Structures are given as C-alpha cells and as structure tokens.
Image (cartoon, rainbow, N blue to C red; front, top):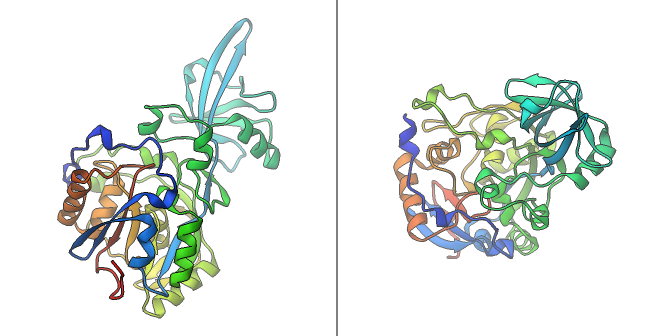
Length: 354
C-alpha cells in the first residue's frame, strides 16, 4: 500500500494542547461493527461485558527534556537535550541541539546536581554519560527535566507544571518512556471504579514508548518502512491472565497502540500468548492477522503515520476513513491530549447499554 492511502486533511483547530478535565469527560467515538456512536470515556464500561479484559501499559514517562550550558573558557553555549533511551554501557542516547557546539568529553551542566559528558555519537543521537545513577539520577532528573511533549504540542506552547500530571497515566509505575501511552490518559478514579463494578478485568504490561513514535514515514511504499524498536515486557502473570480470558471466550482489548503492539509481539498463535521481554519493532499494517486483540481503545492519530496504518489494519482502510471523517465533522480533538476512540470490529456485547 502507498503512504497516501493513510492521508487526510485535519484542521489545526482540532489539535488539542490541553487534556479534558476530568479525564474521563473526554469524548469517545465508538466504532462498533457498522455503527458509529458519539459517547464519553466514562461510558466505556457500557461497551464491555463482564469478564472482558483491558490491557494497560504501566510505563512511566520520564521528564526527558533538559536545558543546560556548556562552558568553554569564557564562552557559554546553551544546550538542549531530549533523552531517548538508556544504553547497556550506562550512557543515554539523546537528541542534543546544537550538537555541533559540543565536543566529545565536554560537560553540559543541567542543574547544580545534574551534569553529563558527551561520550560519543550514534548517528544523529548523542551519547551522554551522566554524573549520577540509580535513585540519585531519577531525583535529579525530576528536578531538572521537563515533560517531553509531542512536537505538535511543544510547537504551540512550552511544557509546564500541569503537564507533569497531565502527561502521565494514573497507574504509571515503570520509568523509561519518553512519550505517554496517551489513550490511557482518559482514565481516572471514577472510570476505574465503573469498570470494576461492571466486572471488567485489568492486566498491566510495560512498553517504554520512544521518541520514534513521532518519526514520520518517509517512503511511499509502506512495506519499505523500518519501524523503531521499543522495549517491552509481558510478565508470566500477565500472559496467564490474558490466556485465561481468551480461553473463556471473552475479549482482550488493549488500551493504546503500545499495549496492542506488545501483546501481538508476545503472541504464539491465534489465542495463544506467552511471557515476553525485549525490543519489539512489530509493524502492523492492513493484512495483519490479529491473534490476541479483539478491539482497541486509542486516540486519533496523525495523517500518514504508522498508527493510522495500525488502526486501518484493525478496522479496514475504508472503514477507518469513514471513522476519521466522522471525527473531523463532529470536531473531536486529535492527538495526545485529544479525545478517544473505541474500535470494536465485531461490535459491542449484546448487553451494551447505549
């Protein structure tokens, strides 16, 4: 398929720069079978049956944006860094601007407590070796860093104190992501209580969302695109829970494309899943055979993105175009802080109360 198959016109006014408050008050488009229903995130339990299982990504976004200075004699240069991922040798891969003003071995000071030396380069990424590690590094980063908002938000306003809470899920547990699993940002205590009351089961998995999630596809033939790799884990307990739900004939619905990509990476075959840990670069496009996921809760994605291709794989290309046309006509809010969609190819359960 061609990249143009996943393009559409999106009015800029529909790009959200702040989330809905409370979280579960966000709008939610439900595409269930042939129907499209306009709902709210708080209505999610009405579309699920007792025994259905939501799979949630418990990654925690780190404050990966840093601003510091490099001093060379009397010359002081402002350096901006966005952390990408830790490396096995103890360094961090980072996007540094302007990298040309930093020589190997030179130090950038980000705060009184936190500094880093340029240890080398890996393509366009810099390799930074920080002066702290472990809990000391985490504490200093929390003090000096800012939330790494996506480019389409950061280009409209700087990150602020509100984003430290807004751009983090309520169950975030495992630090390592530089982007949030944004479909999960619609969940709050009220929605979680309603899901429990409905008898919906919950499983947590971990996939550290990387900055590569925002990289554009640069090839016209999408089969030639190289997907970025992200680290994830499905524990033995999580795999057992998902397998038990499938064996009982209930649905497994990941919240977010990250959770979906991870459980499909861990699949052994249709309805079969095993514990899994490592880097996944799974690329889901139309024609993909889903082995675990029965549906998906997700936000509205960028034109010509790999996430649009994933949604089209689940719902069909023509159906996805219709869903997005409805979302634009009804002025749903798009992207990370935007509204939600619940995508159920086979429709909702017979007892859905809508």
